[in-house]
Structure formats: structure tokens, C-alpha cells
Length: 230
Image 1 (tube, rainbow, N blue to C red):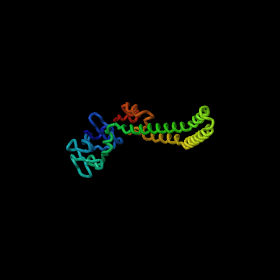
Image 2 (image 1 turned 120 degrees about the vertical axis):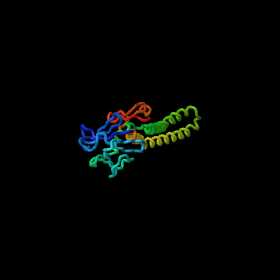
Image 3 (image 1 turned 90 degrees about the horizontal axis):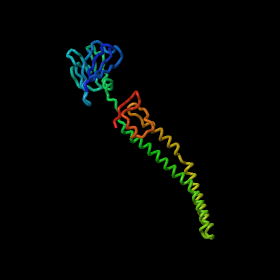
Image 4 (image 1 turned 30 degrees about the vertical axis):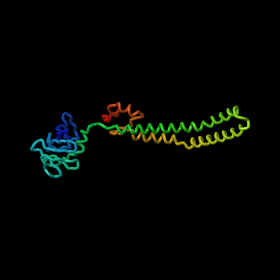
């Protein structure tokens, strides 16, 4: 990426150009007259950043030393113009031309974790409901057996079935009474709403399947519109 940095004649702001894309940074009249309209070139290649004067008469300072061309980092103090009255904020310049995109692939795990959590809660509730209602089946079974078993063993069988039915009823009651599915579901929902967000702007993506979400090209937030990496 090649950025041309200088003073905007109309506003006195810092003008940064990346090809035909121009951005104005800072407050009006914040850049002094001794900064040229095309003062220096910023070459960005991965982590390597080089600043170079466009014209020989332009003056650039790095950490108090006048330079014509020098490798720089965001922690270096860069000043433009002979008076050193303007300090170039390198981080701000680079951020202005960051690609507006975000990686949504980690959200697949967030969705799967939420979906699997809801499924586990539902299965547990089904088991508890089955246990709670199964004592009815034992009661019916006891009634049916009285028609097929010899009379001398009917009372014993009825007692055994009654005890089993009572034990199952008590077990089902305890499981339903101690079930925390509602609280767990709410906690899972809150965590999901916190994690299932646009990595760029933090907007909640809604309760939609990740596969549906990934069909979108960019964030739906009009103030973000970051392109999805998926």
C-alpha cells in the first residue's frame, strides 16, 4: 500500500491518498503551511513501513532527526515541516485505510455451542418427564396383571408394583423439583447474545443459524458494513 500524505489546501486538514481514495484527517487548519500538499510517501508492506519525502525541499523528522527516507513504526515520533509543528499520528493514518472486513468463522463454534446446549437441556427435560409419567404405566400394569396372575400371588405383585410406582413417582418429583433448565436456558441465551456478535462492530447477529448467517456478504449494521471473511 502506497499512501501520499500532505496538507489539504481547502481545509487545512491532513490529506491522505491511497490511489484515488482520499481521506481527510484531523481538525480544520490543523496542518501548518510549511507542510506540502504532497509532502511524503508512506509505503506499507506487511509489517514494514517506510516514510520518504516526495520532494527534496520537504522536511520530515523521525524521533528528532531530519530524514529523507526511513523505516518507521507506530511508536516513532514523526513530525512534518521545518517547524516540526505537526506530528503525524501513524496509527490513525493506517487505521483509516484498514480493510473493512471481519472474520466470522469463530462464530460457528458459538452457534454450535448454543444449539448443542439447548438440545442437551431439551433431552434432559424429556427424560425427566418420562420418569415422572412412567409410574402411571406401572399402575396400569398392576391392574392388568390381576387378570392373568394366580390369585395367591396377586397381592404380592401388587405390593411390588405399588412400591416401584411410588419410588418412580418420588424420583420423578425430585428431578422435576430440582431441575434448573429454565435458569440454564436463560444463562445460555445471555452468553450467546454476548458472544454471537459482529467481530467488527459488536452488533448481535440474532438467533439465526450460522449457515444462514454466512450466506450474507457483510454486516447488516449500516454504520459497519464490514465484509465477512468466511
